[in-house]
Image (tube, rainbow, N blue to C red; front, side):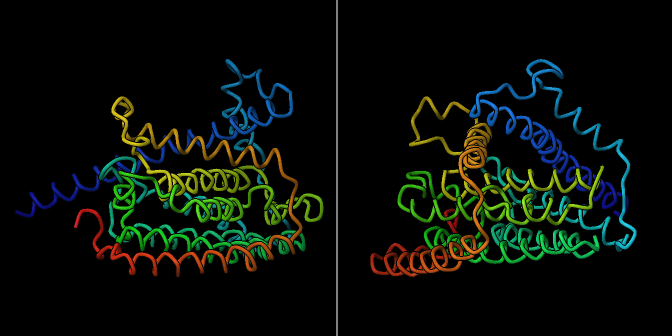
Length: 343
């Protein structure tokens, strides 16, 4: 009996490891090529070529950059807290990877299809600010410290709006399970009836990931490079990977909450022949393209403008929308019972 239990336990662990690798390996490759996509798209918008030397169409440029960061010397400032200085980028990167455990790529296809998946994502994204705060404090640099404080204030400001937007979606679904949220959009994607808060969520995702025009924690003009100004080599690379992995994560959340996840548009018969995971990838790529498009188009906000938008515009609007959604669903008898689509 003990031998059977041991074999079963080992099999479950191996299966979990394989499922984790099946998510993380494509994700890391996607992060590498997202950097190339960003440089190519911005080059096209600015009428230049972008990377085109290393490999066919520059496809090996991402690996060249990775090798360059790995072989460089890791420089630690003399007055820095060495343990926390090295821990901060690892924390940021590991949290960006851990969030993918609950992202469904198909009906029931997730490393952990838990009933509180959306709460897990909110918790992981909230912890991400600690990596930036620790990096700013441990670097023993005023520029890095100010960048860490900016990042904390910015993420707190826009996470409130993100939370209220997600509550509005959950009211319409009646479940915290990401799989149920996607299945609830089988007739109409939530971006149609909830278009205003879809825009609020997307803009808040830009601020949450420190992307332009909200890249104030990394303000080169006044903070040199913000919270990671003292970082180099692999430690800088982990921050870099964490930021781009968070971009892909927020794009997947936009796709799951508002764009129907792996579901084809309108349920059109020829479109259903395309596998669900491919639909999710197409939607994530579209959101990433808009991320890059915004960066190439809009100038950076001032910090007071950033705070005003978060607290005086997005917060009251998302709160009123949540109250209105709850009132409408109760008045029309459409408020779902907790348990979701599959209950």
